[in-house]
Image 1 (tube, rainbow, N blue to C red):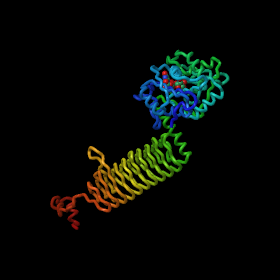
Image 2: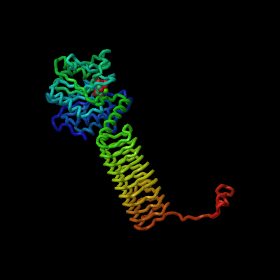
Image 3: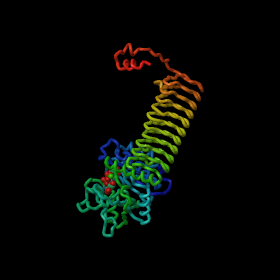
Image 4: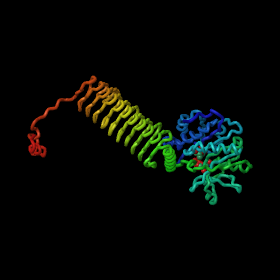
Length: 479
Ligand code: UD1
Ligand code: CA
């Protein structure tokens, strides 16, 4: 999880996130769109916080209350500054700078809030190079096949950076350049202050470009160094929904590769979506079309069958789950769930429990070895060990006003189609008759029967439906 900034003297970090994200076509600010369960801004903040920043400043603009809420949750020590009007990345960096006291010489890492795949390893390497080379500025760049839309890195004769030119301001020849600006930089603090005072907004967008600070420093004879990122996906920015989906797929691949290298089998990794917050163990097997989200943790030997979603679930070793949707459930060792089960928050299945087809469980604990194999609803219930719940049993937990508890003992046999009207307690070893509506407690070792006695009206079909197929069938074989 995120560390709190300020713990030791790392770099100052500025995250620029005030853009409107117009191209997202959304009511939601861009940086609050999610990639595998986490907002764009959280991905970036998490990577930055790994560097133990002395200060973390997030520049927000559009829908600032919403962004503020998320930022203060994931990084309570972060300072939020508001850019009232979009003035460009240079302007945003300047107001960040003005909001904090950065001691001279502290490196300042600046990055955009819309690059969710950036890693702390890359940020640390950039910072280390910057410090080791005593640069004025160090720019993270990338070689990409389709550089359209990005700022281009214009190199000088000695292969240093001459300047960065924005796509819209570039000449035909400059547009051919395939090395792009990632929008991740480290600046020497005083050089940043100086250079930002010298940029202007005479460009295609009428904005102050942070990228121009690089040209300013270069012209002043300062040391500016480009560092090419090893894996270009790290710097991909999200500007529209298509790029959001691309980044999500790339992060999926990165996460899946990590887990496969750690001993997880995936039958079709292109259809497996695992949040970065999930933890898996060796010899977990995952079938196609699976989503593992939130704080889900899965022990070794677990099989996750096709079309299963697990959100905030804890799954113990050897369990198997197929075609099911589980949210906030604990699934015990060697338990089996599904196909087509729905486990809701507060479900605890002990070792070896079976929950079968079309069964819904909520706020209930089911003891070791007990079974709810078919078509049932179990809510607000405690079930002991070795108990069997017959098909189509319902714990009637809601009287229209309040919820009530059902307590079922050990080695109980609930007959099929039993309505257990809560509050209710079924003693150890008790039985209920199929089709019963049980409204009173059943003592241990007893049989609860709660249904009308059957009567047969002999010959009814022959009299009332004479000439029908049924009547003819009965006449043919009257036994
Ligand atoms: C920027 C870079 C470009 C680079 C690209 C990489 C500039 C001028 N251009 O272009 O060289 O290749 O990123 O993705 O910096 N922001 C603010 N306030 C503003 C403007 C922007 O906070 O006034 C924030 C945005 O929220 C965003 C980041 O700065 O997180 C970059 O802005 P964006 O408009 O996305 O810049 P690009 O056109 O992508
Ligand atoms: Ca961008």
